[in-house]
Image 1 (cartoon, rainbow, N blue to C red):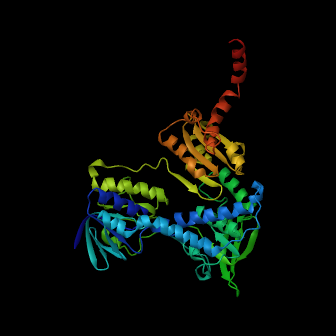
Image 2: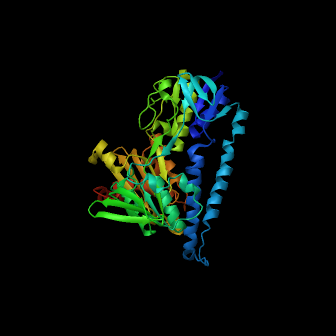
Image 3: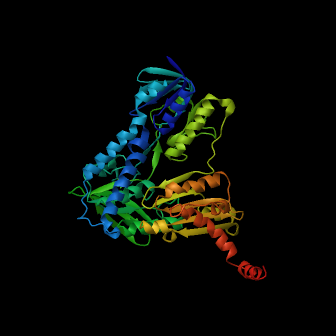
Length: 477
């Protein structure tokens, strides 16, 4: 039996970051991966989809080139080359996850399906691995809801959609979450007729309603049909292979939609099947493996990180959790606890939607309506955005009475790049007055950050009693 200081199950971001960190500290590390290193982010998530987002953006800009004085002879989409380009980018970035790279670090790799035999033993293809500590980082997968006919319809998921060789003429997407909307805009801009069906009252149900509604308006103006408050009742296929979706829409009754392809993007489930967690004594539920603030499971020597915990299904959170595992598994006397007070995320539509902290509704519920301040600034008033023809969207800040940021919501070009200024301010507990007093380069899109913070002074100094007082003070000075 092979003995290790740390046995890692899962070769996605959380597993790879932990393996790299632990091996560099001199730990004996085993890494078990069922298929290939890189995980969902490299193969089915962040990397390929963001390349498709960029390809679709180029197509959109080419169609609007005349607005910039550039004449084109029309735009033709080579879908096969779009997908080939996506795969080339995957291969290029995937070099960072080359098994040989980790072997050179001293990590022993084991490929294949495996399971726990007891709390200290994991078996993969007949080889038994004994570990002082374990990390379960097996990720998550898309789920199919129990909708009549869905399984038989041959519906796509975010994974199988990336294997398409031909652009579908039409596409129905079930679910208006981040993945669903990113695919909706990509396929629409590449030339497909896209319909999005969402059960909740708004797209992106976790986002601030005002921001989500504005994004819906932008997507609708691009030609994407978006139906909310709709419950799908059944799915069928006609003799031409078309997908027929029957949905009950609140206030409108039954409506039928048809398209060449159907993509389901409704939710994800943790990958725990086959691990025999019962033998390990690790407690889990439908949402994922239960962990404490130190990323420990119900077995103190077994940790879990990433999507399999069901907490925040983001690559950057998995990476953050991996750092905690390295510290807490190898140096328990220096135990660190997870801090999720400031967790940012982005929906990579164009414009991007970025969010950190509370929505306006959440802040009102938590602090009371009278104890919060809301500040807005629109991209149509940011010179760089106007120059680039990107005037849609806004920044919305929710603050307490001490000017501490409770939530920041950005809808605009490249919003993910300058959301981090608000993230840092929240992490360091800096009031928005500090942002307002910081010089920002002109002309940049990041000026929207300062301009939004400036609204505090505009509201304080140019409304109410102060303007009259200031006028008198100036005359007597």
